[in-house]
Image 1 (cartoon, rainbow over the protein chains, first blue to last red):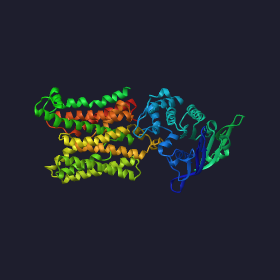
Image 2: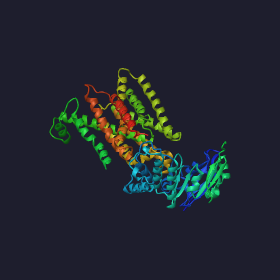
Image 3: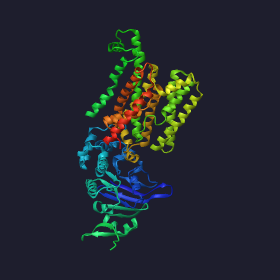
Image 4: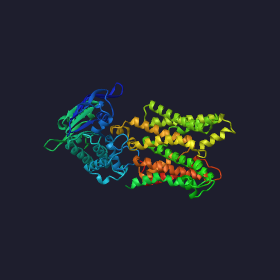
Length: 260
Length: 330
């Protein structure tokens, strides 16, 4: 049981690689954070992993079988993609939106059944937003919308959950809330990949990290081992310092010159 | 569930309206006479002929045209992810107009008009879909192709009008383009019924999946949907409905735009409920418009004029209400 990328490369324009030779292994129970500057290939990698894009070189193996050989519905039963924001053109309710996650389990001309409805309720309770189930998604706060999409990913009942910047545009409390939910889901056996712009999210909530620069792997491994001020400086082009509390590093922050 | 009850009520709504409309017309009939004509009771043969051969096919055609335009409008608004799109977005009515105009210039009779306009409508929308898919099948490309095909075919209609006989053919073409059901008989009704059965049936089967097409393309793909194939199928079914309707009724605007919005305001945006609700409401609304068209003045009022005159203010009110509520549209 694992989601494996082997030396995958992807180019939007022939010859210009957004991703080149990236490998990773995700086991169930782990949260893997993808880090890197804007345009470093995080989202491309995520979209390749969930099968929306097909890498031009290398391969992705889902539990040993090539991802590209799976029919879309089978793939969606095993990998769920959680975008940053809901992009529906109409004001669906929370319940309706989460029910869309049941799509791979509903036949082409079918409609969701009572059983699907129950799974939706379970997913909403798991992320703690069941009381919102009758509300229109577009009337919710940013944090609540993010939870709706995570619930939709859970309703999909896929063993792998891929999240696009789950902590972006949120206040610290909501960041903590979302990432705790994500960490707890991994503890229950899901394999999670999440992109982020915050190295500290990886330190606090992740088991593994992959740092990209210009589409190539710069560092990979356990967050405390793989990340250092030097390597972050290389990735983002500014200097970082470590904040510690005696027991070891707690956070990386940019070094800011203060004028006296 | 309350919403399911409301949908059922909307779907049954056209039935009493059809019955009521059978009473209305140049010659007012009583409920008993209509009832007896329908069930084969004792009524004068002229009354029976009026009810069964003139009014009934026209009213059933009105109901189907209304349902078809509303359902294809709702489906198109969904898959194009745009609340301002309507059933004619891909140039169907311009193509149908060209077919009808040509048929009139060629003097090919009522069924020729219906047939050629149906083919013209399918041809125009098919061309728009072909152009759209050739350039990647994205939503914007498809809409743009529709706009282009629409204006191209409109120019062709003008060209035919320019060369048409101004005393005999031109008025016919102009009236056809303003829409109306006064000439509909059973022979016109059956092809419409067959196309409606395919189109409405298909979209009803697909209706829950239509929801997923209103998400972003990446989301829909990640949910395991064959996005392009499903979008193509939906456009094909919607086009069949629109072309079949326009070929019978001429150009009737606004139903395909307003009724889906009204239905959405009543039962919400979930296509599982929206599609059947739009069908019932569309049929009811067009039946009422047609009643007004044939009874308000001594001569028939073209349908497109009525739907425009009443439809625009109604749309404005709906739009304002929706904005004030802050919901419905994003």
